[in-house]
Amino acid sequence: MSEIDILSFGETMTMLVAEQTGDLAQVRHFEKRIAGADSNVAIGLSRLGFKVAWLSRVGNDSMGRFVTDSLQQEGVDCAHVTVDAAHPTGFQFKSLELEGADPVVEYFRRGSAASHLSVNDIVPELLKARHLHATGIPAALSDTCRELSHVLMTQMREAGRSVSFDPNLRPSLWSSQATMIREVNHLASHAHWVMPGLAEGELLTGFDTPADIARFYLDMGVEAVIIKLGAKGAYYRTQLNEAFLPGVPVANVVDTVGAGDGFAVGVISALLENLGFEQATARGNWVGSQAVQSRGDMEGLPTRAALDAADVSAGLRRQSA
Image (cartoon, rainbow, N blue to C red; front, top):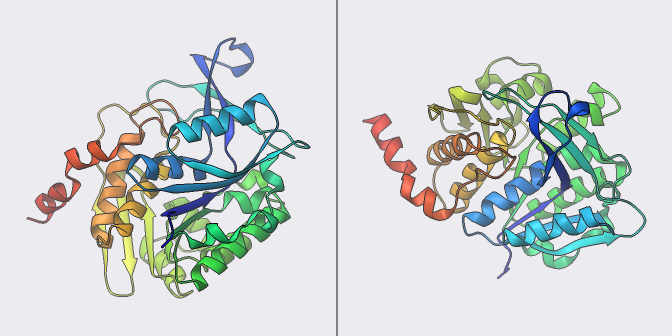
């Protein structure tokens, strides 16, 4: 039996968050944090008590040490993070916005250590994990990362492991929109559970309703499609049933970045606990609602104690009563 519940992979960057509003060019003080959609999910699942392994590369620099130290403090296993002496750790600047507005983010990741991930970084131990979570971001970083994504997803599915996939589109990283759509949909076809946002689903499939977007992926052989609808909630569809679940009201939205990663944490954790898709979608909505109430990409992700205290299933029962 594997000691790893979940394997996640990709790039974690150092994030410099502005401590005052305004144009980033005028900001003089920043707080140092970490950022990365794939590692946000890893952290969220670790906080819920899962054993999570992280596959990545960082530079032999202070930012790389900061990234690995931060992940390890969250309980994420970084034994398979390679220190790359030839390439730097990626980083980003993020603006401070008020009243829940989307922040400005500037990336400095081209040629980063993580972009040099390849199939050579796969070791047999990692393939024993119960579950693989993947996003479309690593595949956009380089050809070698794209090959790694396909190989990991294919091998894990063939080994009988469950595989989840969040497109997490980053158009600026791709050579063209057509290439992005083709490659991301190819990756999605390897997954059991696909979790696009509504706008992502529309772009990737050409359909404009959640039901039709879901059918597009179900016809590929995907087990379930769970579509994020922002504050409105989420919709899931399988070959057997479908449902819309309303979002969790939030009085004060602080930072929307990372909400989708929180949603993925809720869905994946519930499904790995053998809960149904309705319960998983409800948990995804709840975790996402927690994520938007804190500054930072992953700071608002809940602990297991907070999740248990919220009793999300009880709220679901009240909705259906």
